[in-house]
Image (cartoon, one colour):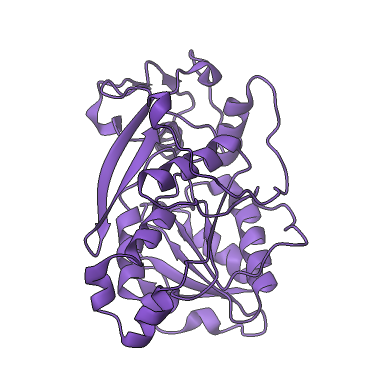
Length: 323
């Protein structure tokens, strides 16, 4: 299967999507050529972020060495990658894009043409979770937040701008506005890679979110740091595409929920049309997680191992038509 930048369907998708599509289609070989955006250009050094970023000590660091990108992509997606182009030799290119998400809040995000370990651009499903968060401030406002699989940091930036957005604030109660006036307590998290932390810091600065949110580098399935703070609300968007990592992802989710305490909740949005969503939910339940559906394929998850029927309530199962 040959894909080039002239194929408009892939102009705004990451290398992950190319490999993921091949896995779904049953392709045994992916040959990627000239996978670059024609209109993109490197961001000038003068415009790069100078906004400080707080980095929490990581659980692990990525392995060094040539071929790391190929190995990481194969591990994450669960399929072998063979290419006539060395992904580590790509010329990294950037493009800044203004995106209106929800409640009239727009953000500017720098996207790149490639990253081996995470999403390098904003996916359309991001707007669904952003809209739900804007409509349900009681679910997260005033809580200690963690964004799992933050990637570009777009949702973290969105929430920081949302709590300063006058039209949205006007719809809140007086008590909610008082809570929103306090600094947002939000930590981003993604694979242990300096480029990811740098991208979040850069996108924070682009949107006048300074200092950037604290960042916790974490590889799913590895132990949590002993000094990690206890998050009250965890949220994530479209992280179920990494099918081979479900066991590790569940381990991290359950560990965070248990670490936070019985009232800690997670909101997981899955807007991709994948067939493995139920596999993830089954693993989650087997590990003591319980979920209900609170929005358009948005799951509210808690750790309740002693309640075997918690996920069997009305409306809790995923919509088969949208799965």
